[in-house]
Structures are given as structure tokens and as C-alpha cells.
Image (cartoon, rainbow, N blue to C red; front, side, top):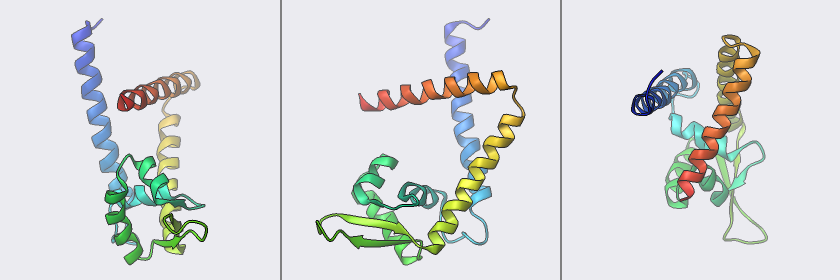
Length: 150
């Protein structure tokens, strides 16, 4: 059995490797000819906008970025006709973002990729392994969320 230092190194190596591999796989699968005018990051902004739309602050919070950084990405997505901006009629300071038809197509394309990847991964695991992995990933997500809030 690995000692604590060895386990730490293994965990770090696996997490870094998984993150990089997922990003590469996602980029190859998502950025197709139809969506060649946007980046993987743009696709995540589209995902954060969501099917019902959201305001800029909510989207920025979902992505853990500033509204200023989001504005730059949003300007490009508006220009490319993936999203639309509308000011709230109740409070003109609030900018609401909704997906266009092109944005919805990108959203569903991204969602299908994640669904297919998850399904393929789950087919390689037993039901018990799926349950253990789901619990461990949930705990890991909670850890990173609480660690980021410190």
C-alpha cells in the first residue's frame, strides 16, 4: 500500500492528467465544423447561460470569473449570433442574456458530448463502482468548492 506522500503524488498526477485529457477530448468533440467559430471556453459560457437565460452576474458566478471578463467573451458571442443581450425592463442595470437558435444548437451539442462521455464511462464500471465514484466525485467537488471559498 502506498504511503501518504506516494498517495498525494498519485492523486495529484491523476487529477492533473484527467483535467488535461478531458479538456482535449472535449475540444476535439465539441468544436466541430459547425461550431468552428467558437472556443471550448465559449461553449462553457453558452452552457452557463442555460436554456432559460441568465443575467451577467449569475453567469459570471457560475463560471467563477468577473463580470468584466465575461463581458469580453459575451461581446464575441453576441457578434457571432450565439447569444442576445437585453436590459431588464425593471432595472436597466441588469443585463439578461439568452441563447439564440445557433446558441441553443451549441448548447445541445455540448450536452450530448457530456452525456455520451458519461454513458461510455459508466459502461466500463460495475454498478457498485459507479456509486462509489459518484460519491467520491461529489465529495471532491464539495472539497474544492469549500477550499475555493477560504
